Amino acid sequence: MSDWKQSTINGGSLKHVPLETGSNGWASPPGNLFNLRDKNYFTKKTKSPSSAAYLLHPVGVDWLKSGSKLDHVLSRADNRIIHALKDSDNKKTFVLAVNLQVPGRDQHSAVFYFATDEVIPANSLLYRFINGDDSFRNSRFKMVNRIVKGPWLVRTAVGGYSACLLGKALNCHYYRGENYLEIDVDIGSSKIATAILHLALGCVNSVTIDMGFVVEAVEEEELPERLLGAVRICQMEMSSATVVSATGGVKGVTPGGVSSSRVADDCDADK
Image (cartoon, rainbow, N blue to C red; front, side, top):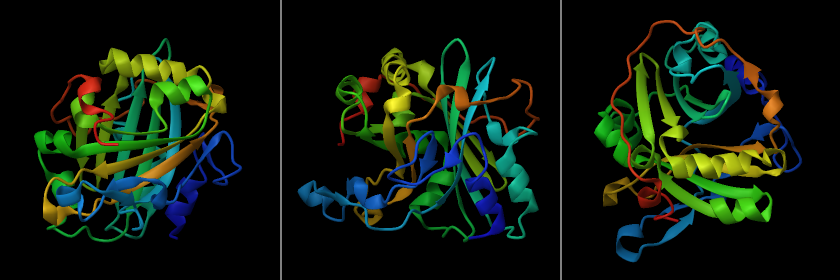
């Protein structure tokens, strides 16, 4: 593993912890814990545990707190991932950041960073997603969740395993930089999602959840589905968030489009 990745994995307010025993941190769950569309999905509607490696390697998680919603975190002057990337010798590195924006009296962001040092094939689904328009991205960006540990109430509200097309269920903003794509997911754009999230946050220090991100396959040649990447959040403490200034960013790429719809229509339909 390159030095810049090692430093970002072990940095940040949420530390990298052991998969089975860690707490107040994050880990990388194996892909076979997630059931994704397999090569027979369009003929037999079958799903299988994902045995393939992630398309992008997890390189860090930030848990941030601010007085206002944090948009386009990769454009911020204080973003540690961008600083590490600039110091890297590998100029082919590409970063995908998923910024889950958590509404509340204090605004929080859970930001998951994934990266590859390899050139992304021009004919691949991942390449099309990175360089496509927002309509294409919204129709394909999917999150799959597993509750590993948690109170009965949270398991009931969230479900043991669920899938959601985030680009259709919530407002998503896409920021395309020279060597990155950031996806800001506004959880506050849905009353249902906000209510479920606040329920989970009320007992977050007893919840462990696996979150995987996928570009949904809708054509035969796009099968089997593969995880962009996945993280396990292990019994996080709300107070562990790094406090950042709402004005700490710098001018960067303007957002693309926004998509919104009802959560109930686009989540849990593809478990």
